[in-house]
Image (cartoon, one colour):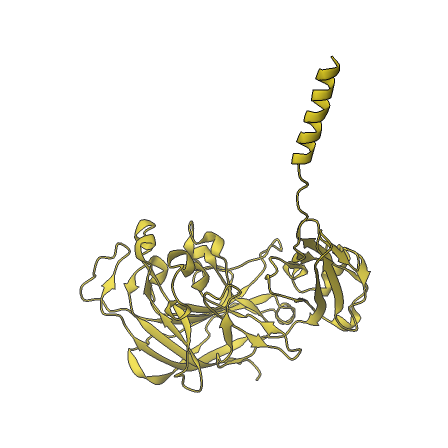
Length: 377
């Protein structure tokens, strides 16, 4: 009996020595940041501005945009951290952001790594009325180009979006210059945006999405719908506080050699065309729910109050001026307009019917020096 007991004891020691503790996490990142305080809602134009989701891995500055930063009360910001990490000041503690950014330090679970973040509140910057498209950079993964404007506080603001984030699903190995929306040094003045209708290869044939038109629009792109409902990927429009009257700019356009339908069959006698249009629409419905227009209703939604579209864009290899004026008789509420109750969408596409996957591979639209004119200016 004593031998059995001794054997069990020794076996237990051996097994225990073989079980190693899981290594503690060495990551120290902020993954999300948000404000969960109903009393703070009045300081924001939109409830969605109270959350910063999916913080880029390389970001060290987190910015919330509010009406007036100087009158903010003490604010409790909540953070989602990498597993096991801690943050100081304490997560959810109230801090004074009225005088500038607050520094937060994140410490990894193993205690060996630290990372600092600057969290700040800035006044919402009104989008510009002139766009020269000089400023762009590669996305956080270095795959494709994104465009930005820099506000008076030195913060980059990404008003413009493209379908590049969806094209990566079809052509993950494509170089940045091979994407549908890229910068071009040969602009009307300086740099321009070049939009090209591209083939989506074997992936496109499999999912009956054979082409991707180059597009460029005010808004955001949501890649989660790229596989299921492509037209919902484009969130078109951003808040403006002025009534638009017209949009002008310069373009060049060369159609691709062969126009094809959604089955990649050549449509004889048809030539591809580009598209340039803009709409002003209510961004809340009758119940106060958010309204966002997408590729399937951006020209047909009942919430549209003004619409502008360039009727004809002939092919040209020379920079050519375009102009489109807004039309519509629906009354615009000046108070609602001043409080960002309307969104303005402005869209450029290298293939007019690219949203139905019809067009010509190689069609190229270049756009530069775009200006939006507003009422009473």
